[in-house]
Each structure stands twice: as C-alpha cells, then as structure tokens.
Image (cartoon, rainbow, N blue to C red; front, side):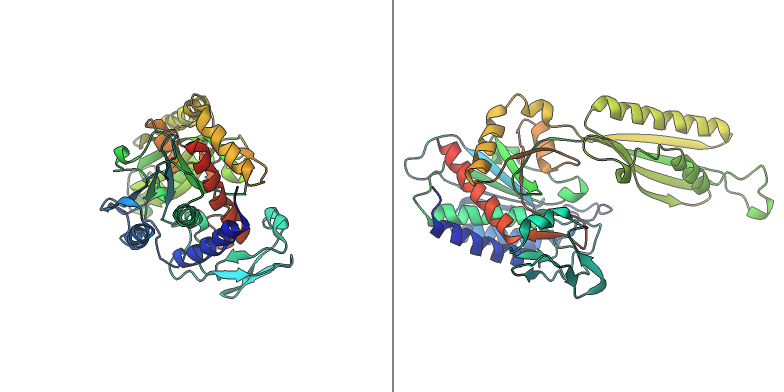
Length: 416
C-alpha cells in the first residue's frame, strides 16, 4: 500500500528532480565519432552518480563510455529476483537542447499554452489531444526556443525518485534493483559499450509516453544509405556527358511510395523515412530509415531500393549507386513473447497505481529493443512525456508521480 505521505514525497521530489535535470545540456550528435558523442552528456551522468551515492546505493560507477551503474540492495527480509531499470540522459538533436527553461503551468485551465521565447508558438488540445486529460494539472513545457527533454529526463527523474523513496520509507519491500543510465540513445548508440554483466536478466526502460502505456513490441529497423556517384562536367559543355549525382538522388527519392512515409502512416503501418540528401554534381548521398513491425515488409522495401538503384544505373550509363544496408534493431515482440512474466509484472504494477494499462507497440525503438535482442528482455514503461523531439514537448506533473509510483509497485511484485 502506498500511503498519502509517500505519494506526497513522490510528487514533490520527482517534479523537482525533473526541473533540475532538464536544465543540463545533454544533446547527442549523430555525426560525432566520440564516445559518448558529446561530452556534455557526462555532466548529467556525473550528477546522477553523485546523487546515487548520497541516496546510499552501492557499486556506483561512472563509466567513461557514457554509463552510470548502481545497485540498490534488497530490503531486510525481502526475497524475489533482481531486476533492472534504465533511462537515457541524452536529448534529441532534432531541436535545440541547450539553455532549456522549464515552465510550470499550474492548474492548467484548458486554454492555449503560450511560449515566451516564441510568440508564434502555442500548445493546444488540437495540437495534442492528450492534453484534454490533464485539466487542473500542472503542465510543464520549455520556453519555446528548445525542446523540454522529457525524453528521457522524465524517466531519469522517475527512477531516481522511486529509488530515493525505497530508501526513505523502509516499509516498502524490494529485492535487489540495478540501475543503468545511458547516453546516445537518441542516435541509436545507447548500449554500445554497455557492461551487460552489470544488468540482471530482466529489465525495464522508462521511456514511453501517455500514463499507463506498456510497450513490448517495436519496429524492426534498418538504415539504408545510397551513395550516388555521377560524372562532373562544366555545365556549359555538359550535354550528354554530365551525370548530376544530386539531381539523380532527388529523382530516385521521388520514386518512393508517397503513402509509405512517416507523415502518411500510423499504428502498424511501416514506412521509408528520408533523413537527408547531401552532395553535388559528382557525389551525393541519400540517408533513409526503413521501418515496419514485420521484417518481411522491410525486406520488401529494401529489395525495392536495390531494384531502384539498379534501374537508375541502366537509365544513366556511367552512374554508380552503392547501397549500404544496416540492421539497427529488431522487434522485441518475438523475445518478450517467451518471457511473459516480465510483462505481466509491469501490467500489474501499472494497474496498482489505478491507471488503465495501455498495451502499445512502439513506432520507434528504445535501448530496451537492443537489450532484448542481447538476452535481457526489456519492455518499456511510460514516462509521461508527449510531443517528443518538438519545441511543444510537454509533460504533466501527475504523470511523473504515477511513473515513480509504478516503480514502487514493480519493486514489491519482484520482491514477492
């Protein structure tokens, strides 16, 4: 049973931690070869390591590769199995992440939320229908010139608050809990270099959205790079001689199915996503993401891209297109279907808070997707943030508290 006193502690502590963490610049960089990709991520990891030691955790380690590990020993008399909790500290490079100024819109009345740093920006129920569930709540946004960072500093704050509560209130039973905070998740490198020996077999990420969500399925994900090699000639003398690589790349992209793009798909529909085109006359590169819940559908898309490249080489004699295909992560459904107890305990913990459990497939991936493939089944529990990777990103204070409470119920269930 979670007492009113404990709930009050959760609500106060998790909001305070979240507001503090989002102000630490942690944007990752997909073009960097450094590990982690940006040194600023280590700033928050260092803060977390120090706070974990203050809370009383053991085996706290700040790893140079961009991880913090820590262990909460089992409470007196508690049995059960060990489980792990993970969240990532980096924020998306899609929007500015430096100088975040969090704003608490207390007792939100349903009116449009304005952003002081951008008078043209507003957040309404039309923009985010989920807002309608939170009238009277505290809505937290940034000031309009950056993202907020709820993805995934909400998860970080919720884990830290729950662990602090387990230490502060000895009446809360728990077995051993191992923590891992990661870097570079937003650029697909979240568990590169992770020490899997520091994690138990069963883990959870806190990196989801709406309260009550539980995700045990994700995209099967591929990255496809088309390196186009043309023929450069002075444009004044180019007739029948020039092959403009950038122009060919644009024509090739125009052949992708218009209805198989992120902006035209939802739920269980897959897509091609054009990340960027870069280059000039002689060389150009097309960066694509290919996504679906079924690997056969992605194989179909990749085969189409290869066929398209070959047909363009025939169409433009002298043109060369190199197709590079990389499997980024697989649908964790196939592994988690063999480990139902992990999912069932999360369902029970969410239900214990009074929330409705919302089973959902992730239209994306998490660190848990990769961990699941490496033998550590890791479903994803809600963290509460909405409109991720956007300057309209927001979270309700009650969502932060409910996620932290979910961890307490999860700890009790694993202790049993």
